[in-house]
Length: 345
Image (cartoon, rainbow, N blue to C red; front, side, top):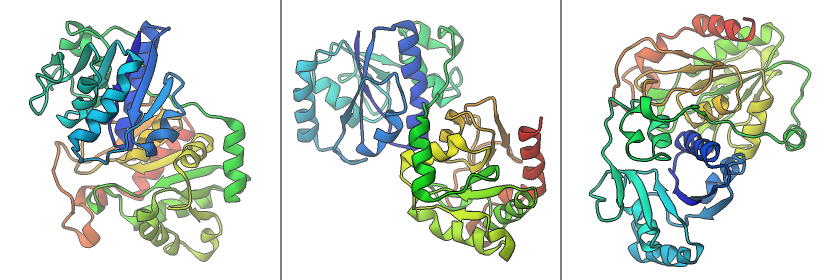
């Protein structure tokens, strides 16, 4: 059995897609799973032992380029895949398997893909409230994919592999001490401040943890440098000694290794939150307008804090600095208590 997966293009979605790969390998141990993904995904896919080959998707997110997709598909015909599973819901994402003449092309219906997918399924969102189960269902026949309770067990969740030598190399390269337990903060969010716990709350939590003998590492992309520096600046001079702003200074593979080696993570709803869950570290996940009922952290070591109900489609909160009131209302004391319950059960 030789399967081509057309992957999603976001960090959190890519992590969740591993549940599908693990399910396929569990039920078909000899299956070859190749994943077509943007190059930035390689560090994540390299940590998924179920993936045999990573195929580059050179076309950017949102780019149709039919001729380019035809070229990619024609080049894949010699691989003789038995099945393609298309995870994104767009029309363009289904073009490469169609051009590749892959006999079975599976995916949820979306954007009029009837002709491109010959194993198309109509999604019942109430039957599949979780994104991870929507991915996993595509690995089984259409009858089993009608309702989540019909999907064969076990329900294998994302689990990224860790190379301990590579992990130590990350510590050495970034010159990070290991003489204190480490709390990692992930204060960034792809869609702006409305999904962020306020920086001043992160700073107050950091003070409390440093007073307990911990150190704090702040992870994020280059876009998160400003908010990360705001956290450091709000600390006392003594506490700043034990707080390291690594936003924009780590590669994705280093971020994975640092999370796997820390003692706890506090994160907004973000891609890094899903990575923390997939390396099985104690995690406090903070939600505001977005809902954990669709993309929660997939770990029994995670606790979600959310003070409101329902999903609110919002990019910028109306409170000071663009924060959303529901996240402002999550106090550092509540997060500190929840964190201590996780690390000292």
